[in-house]
Length: 212
Image (cartoon, rainbow, N blue to C red; front, top):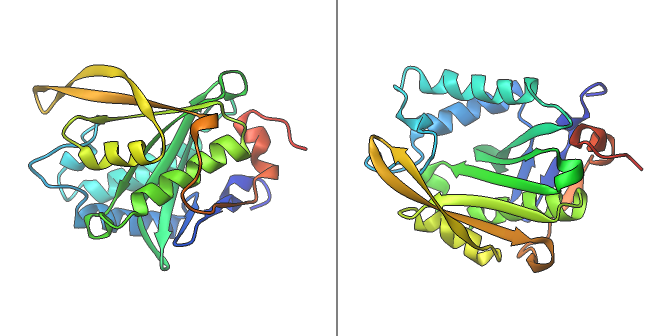
């Protein structure tokens, strides 16, 4: 797309493609959300979006991602990729920053449909956005967090080199819950998979950076 080059931005790894979603991608992503993301007895997300009624969940997913695109600003952006495996949308991986041109720090979050969990794809998709952050955009640090009862997410962080960065207290389904914060410095990151970035140059001004 000539006037919004972010639709041409893609990250590829041996098994995955990450891209800004089309309307068709969002339909598929909503289907994956309906199929299930986690055990209903647990809530891994700080914002409990999966607790929405099944009748509302697909529309909520679509509207959230459209809102993310509509609210993009160079000084405050939310790069929310869909994750594609073997031609099928299987989840989402985001990367967020405020005043990135100065702070050079990003935050990440993600989810995968349950049918695609447990085979290393979560590590591969986060490695892809970290490569974009550090090698493509010149980030210095990346942060993330997970509830203490979400060992899968914390294991991904550990594998990628993040270090503990304190804890925070939250209300989750009416009860107290602790999140572990983690931080990764640029010099401590080595991607476990090769990552290619496609179409970044024209997008740099939208990340608050100079092209060329």
